[in-house]
Length: 186
Image (cartoon, rainbow, N blue to C red; front, side):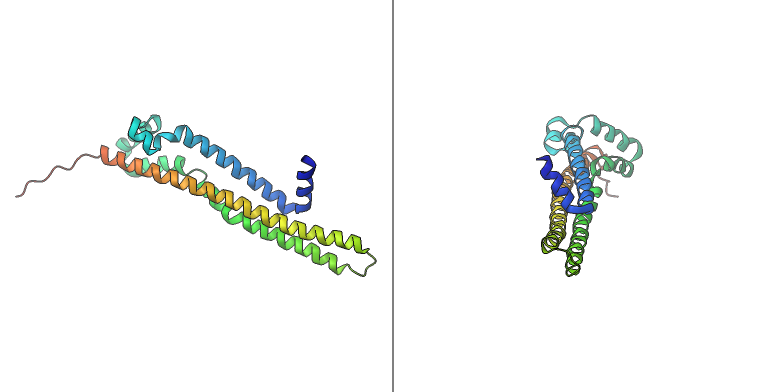
């Protein structure tokens, strides 16, 4: 199995290595965000808020809200809620571009091998060079698209969590805001 992975990485060229590093960063971001939303961030989930009324994170946010106002409270909590979303957005755009770069480099390698025809190189050797270039082109394209799709799914999942938390925070702001007293008519 390890030999197969090594052969694929070797055939994919240098761009595939960049894509592997990018994919590891996406997986690490996804695992960290899943852990955060399963533990600390779970108190911003609507069902838990309705059941428990929050937890330590929400209490901290309430304190900032009462001491420093809405803008500061939302700024402080937004950093935690949105962590990783921008990076995943970057990956959604960058991974396919890296895949296309690998495609161009692989095709250039294949076309370079075709240009070597008639220079005393055997047909079998030319066939290997052409197939290596085409393999690099296809592997990097597929890897770039697959990584972008995984990052896109994670990004949408995070956006859904952030929207839900925003709803909880808005409910809390409404609950904590002083009720407006009706003004008597003059």
